[in-house]
Image (cartoon, rainbow, N blue to C red; front, side, top):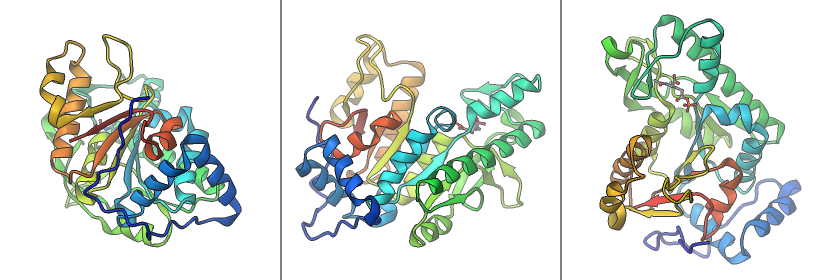
Length: 309
Ligand code: X2W
């Protein structure tokens, strides 16, 4: 693969940083797993790098709702792996497909404007039910693998109406309460978040999960922002190949001029650039398949698409 080390030298990696392997019964499994994905040197280097910042600054991982339905065992074992090596990603999940399935079974056609769901009262009831169900499903799968996980389904996102006329019960995040997330990590539990938000007067609002994950990243400034998707990265529509790395400073202008960069891809790249411009240079975005999480995080060549400044 292409060499594209993701370690930024401006973050000092101390050789004295202790890497604690949490669970001794799984220690040998963890070491084995690590050796399978990369050389001992690079894996150890990344482990040290990820533990050189505070625990809450390792990563934000956004999980699309489709993954909970289609790849739950893989997802749970990837997150368990991180937990067992002592890393605490902040996990935020969506539930788009599950909402659509229920709406369609009730004879309601899902309705979006620019990728944002128009959420009336009846739809909102489905949205809330799906978020709670999928959150419980993920937390339960993690607990079964010996991972202490904490459902956080309220109390994080404050919001106003995005545009009440246009989208109805959809929120625009105005504030993030870090406390429940920090408390979870301090208690040794992986925080598992939904993207539901609340107005000052207590109205629950629907927020796109990608957007909410971005807001979490803005306040925690993690080293990695990970988007798990089915394609396993950004695909160059002309060659059909996965883009290994995008260095925004050098490539952004040229990239936007390329014929395959349009619609959703263009929007996604623009949003990611906007996010990274607000974050320290050490932060980078990875778009990957759930099975590639370890390879992406712990090897120089990675596995998905790495985007950085
Ligand atoms: C999204 C929230 C769920 C979501 C929705 O109702 O579908 C809005 O569009 P995925 O699985 O990550 O797509 N909210 C306002 O984003 O789920």
